[in-house]
Every structure is written in structure tokens, then in C-alpha cells.
Amino acid sequence: MRKYLLGIETSCDECSASVVSFDPERPLDPIQVESVATFSQIKIHQPYGGVVPEIASRNHLETVNEMIDEAIQVSGIDAKRDLEAIAVTNRPGLVGALLVGVSAAKSLAYALKKPLIPVHHLEGHSVSIFLADPGAEARKQEAEYPMLLAIVSGGHTNLYRMEDHPRSWSRDFLKKSLVGRSRDDAAGEAFDKTAKILGFPYPGGVWIDQEGRGGNPSAYPLPRALPQKSTLDFSFSGLKTAVSLLAERLRKENVLDKEIQNVCASVQEAIVDALLTKIYLAIREHGCRSLAIVGGVAANSRLRARLDSEWKAQGLSSAPVFPQMKYCTDNAAMIAGAGVFRFLQGNFLQEGDFLTLNAIANPES
Ligand code: KG4
Ligand code: ZN
Picture 1 (cartoon, rainbow, N blue to C red):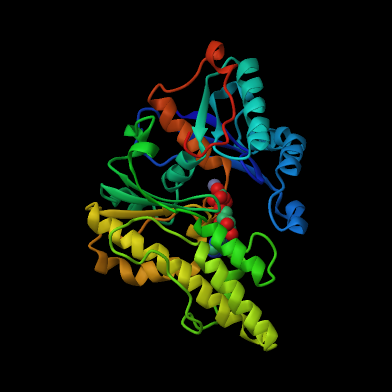
Picture 2 (tube, helix red, strand yellow):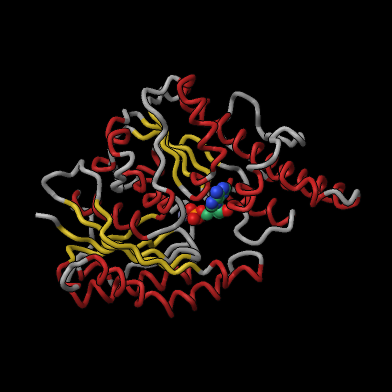
């Protein structure tokens, strides 16, 4: 019999709730997403050029119950009491924003007498490829382990060597399997900061992607950091400075507007190139058979196009796996999905234990 689980995500600027369903007898099957209700705060933060934490938490407070009710209603379950458990992002993120989701989840779990599952936001992104995806199911089932998992988002650029399906992930797999990370800005942050320099609104990744489509990716030479073979770490802070100097020069020459497509294509190429260099190196060094890329930057069209033509030369046994576009950026379906695997492992909190559950800002948590 199928069981239903509610997920809640409020770690940054998306307020999201989702109901997923699963069959405990078939734990390796993809998880079905029954509903996702998301309120994006992007427009609210746009005038400030980035997320304002206090505004984010206040807004989550206003919308979280509405998102939960909508997710329940659309899912088709009769009532909240039909839920098996509730999963919520409790780390890492903006602490005030996280607290809103955690408090909502605790109250609901308490009232319904259901288990509560605290989820690490990156564990959610990792599970986004295991949400049912009618277009790519077969390919995802085929993916062999070990798998290189790249989380490329606005807050993180991390590489993990995954030994197995999430059904077998240990509690601390994120710590144990990390093989590379950004030393400064995350890839999404590099997109957003360079986009801001070029005059695009927050978040800029999607703008650079769109504008870059018509441009020449080698029009402007930009730095690729840490090209040395020995490290699997990334660094994107130098790119920001280089783009800032380039934009200043082109503005002085009055040609930035005319050149914007070429500049965007060159910036995008620098970021994608830096990502792929280390991803390919990690695949070789860690003997990975498959590759999965998740997080907001996994939506990037140039990254997907280059992988499409390059993956075979990297010794992978199958094509790279991506989440569906709608599950690349933050959403509660991936948090509910991570909750399902924890639930199946018996890894959850009961009423007596979860009332003291806290929100944790630290990404190392
Ligand atoms: O995963 P996510 O929603 O939030 C975090 O957990 O950080 O990722 C958001 C990031 C932003 O930096 C955004 O600019 C970037 O993903 N992004 C993109 C694209 N779509 C979103 N970057 C490049 N190309 C895109 N198409
Ligand atoms: Zn995220």
C-alpha cells in the first residue's frame, strides 16, 4: 500500500511544501511527487540585489501554512492524518528562515502524533534525481555506482563519491563522501555576482544562461581557477574580479550593451569549464561509473550541452543524470524524498524527541 509523506522547505527564499508517495515494499522505486506548492520570494528580494534574511523569515511566516494546505489539497489525500510522517529542512541555511519551517513541521507532527524527520538541505538536493521522472526513468535506474554527485547551487559547489542508492546512505554520508568543494564562492554565487556586475537582476544565473545562448564562449578570455591537476577544489572569486575589470573597460568604450551576449557566453564558459575540469578529474581519481549533477546550476543549458557531447570520453557507463528542471532549484519535493529514505531506515524522531529540534545555520552540520 502506498504511503504519503509531507516535506517542508524554508531554508532560503523559496517557501515550499510537497506531498510524495512511496511503497515501503519497493524501496528502490522512484518516489512519486503528488503535489508541490512553492512561493518564490525572488521578486521581493530583487530590489536589494540578494536575499535579505529578515525579510525572508517574515515572508515564510506569512506563506508557510498556505503552502502546506495547498500541497495537502492537491495531493488528493483525504486529510493530514493520512500522512505517514513529516520531513523538514532544519540545516543549513538562514537560521530565521529555517526556524519557520521547523516550527510549522513540529506543530503539525505534534498535533497529528506523527514522526518528524529533520533533513539536511544538501541531502534533499542529492535525492532530487530519485524523484519520479517519466522522461528519464530508465536512464536513472541504469546508473551504476560509485556515482560522482556534484551539488552545484547558490550556496554550495560540492563533489561527493556516492557508493550506493540513498536507501543505504548513512546518517553522515555527506561528511564521509565529500571529495571536493569550493574554497570561496559557490558556482551559483559566481553566476549571480557576475550577473549583478553586468547589470542583471538577482538571481542572475538564468539571465547569463539566456543571454549567453547567442554569444561566442571564447570571445573574452577569463580565468579558470586552480587548474593544477592535484586538487578537486574549486575557486570562483578571481572570476568576479576579472569580470568586473572587463565590464569597466567595455563600459568605458561604450560597447558593453553591444557585447553583452559574448560577455555572458564567456562568463558562462569560464564557470562551466571550471566545473567540468574538476568533475572529470574526480571521476577518474575516484573510479566513478556514473555522474549526477543537482542544484540550481544543474539547470544551466551550456553545462548540459557540453556534458551531452563530452560524457562518453570520460569513461562513464551511462549518460549523466540530472533532476527534472523544476527540481533543480529549491523545492520541498526533494526534502520529502530525502525524508522517505530516512523513514524507511527507521531514522526519525517521535513526539518526545522532536520538540527540542533546532534550526542550524552552519553548512558543516
Ligand atoms: O539550489 P538553489 O535553488 O539554491 C541553493 O540551495 O543555493 O540554486 C540557486 C542558484 C542561483 O545561484 C541561481 O543563479 C542558479 O542556481 N541558477 C542557474 C540557472 N538557474 C538557476 N545558474 C546558471 N544557469 C541557470 N540556468
Ligand atoms: Zn538549495
